[in-house]
Image (tube, rainbow, N blue to C red; front, side, top):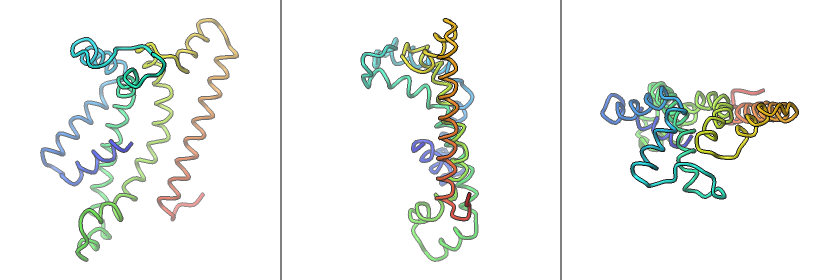
Length: 198
């Protein structure tokens, strides 16, 4: 989330410049390429060609084994957050209260951090609920490609072995996590925007 928001803010502040086009170009690429394509590409580049990182396995959860799976799983969400943040930040920067802050001579850094960032984050928060669910379900593909133990692999094995109690338990767990994440997002939404009360 931090990377996506930072990239979106930079693109909004540098609107219609090479920085904006570069950030949005990378973001669009990250959005349109699915994780099951990104994951093998990362293995080919960083594991097979460059030999910088291992291409799969668990090895007790060592950090170097987690880098490629985390990048493959999070890239699309970072890109989407960057696009949402950029659009929202541009809209906020053209609002009247930001013009007033500029007229008072406040430094741009303070305007962004104290006045513009909070309202610009509201659409990002709305996206985070479905994004958390997508990360949980998308991890099944990543776990299979990288040979990682996890919920996805457990679910597939349970389905293949007709272990219906395991499949049902995992389904309930994912449903409960979905409700929890959406509840957290709703609370954060009310914290950022006090006008919204549930």
